[in-house]
Length: 122
Image (cartoon, rainbow, N blue to C red; front, side):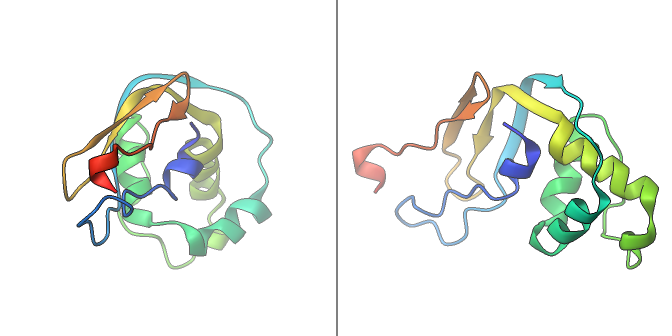
């Protein structure tokens, strides 16, 4: 699972959950892959990112980005490249996602998050 995907996942479908975001990410195994840097793509993704979630994920994988999105990030190639690495070059192979409101754990196996709910949770 790419961390770009993680940015959009929520547990809002669980009965009683109001927000369900951001999910707490626990990485057991990750791998890094190469992807061509495209500053335009990363810049266009900025309005769609929940910066606090991405910042926490970056810390989780041992990378550092500012805790708040810099005002001039479009012109900051170093931060854009770090963001590119975090979002597109890190694959979570094994781990879990935890709902912030219910504590429900969703497993990540072979890079695929299992967000299926039990009958009693719908």
